[in-house]
Image (cartoon, rainbow, N blue to C red; front, top):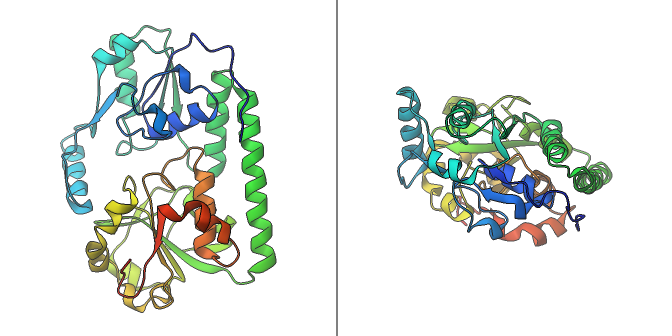
Length: 323
């Protein structure tokens, strides 16, 4: 998709404090206006050389259980999961700072950002806060950023493309798949958490029926008994913040924490592992890509082109939950 060039913003400086915000700015054609990003921003790859405004307080842990315990300890002691570089923020002096007010575990908290701005920035810095809970909110957040940054024409072209892709999926699902397959998405597995917020809605668009999750609600922590009470047709493992290779290294932990042996998804080789760092968990432009990945996992014969497009970012597990 070719976006129209932006001409009015050459002098405006933008800082982003979470990956989805960086992706939004870039899809709107304003990458050159970025002066600082979060330490987790890695897409597009061309932003990798920008200064990092944030860092993580969580140590270098090797598995999801250790990461969860570290985060829980920080929150229990009223400590932040992330640090904001006030000196760098003061030096960069962004005109716009894009943050979020949805999850203190996912990015710098909104309170931290407002406190920092009051300390080191003047009132000329505009804070744009994102709080998406469903697909509509994601598209609305992108539109809000576009309006603030005078990039509405770029947003309109982006949204037109999204609408066409969703319409294509919806029509193909209706034409080729008469039975709704039950779907479980796993957002974390030490402990096991089920994908919430916009994920159930995505499953419905892809022609599936979500299990255990509640639309618009955050990830639900479930027990082994909860998981034993269901029998999903398809399981998608997409741990938040984990790249594909990192998830594949933890398959033994996945085996330990989910009762997969009796699931139809396991018996029919319909358990998929997906890059949860790039897809599903970032409420930005690539949520549309995530919907296409989801559509393939539910209907591989209907959407073979999506495997060709995203094959490097997913794996279909074989017997014994092996790659």
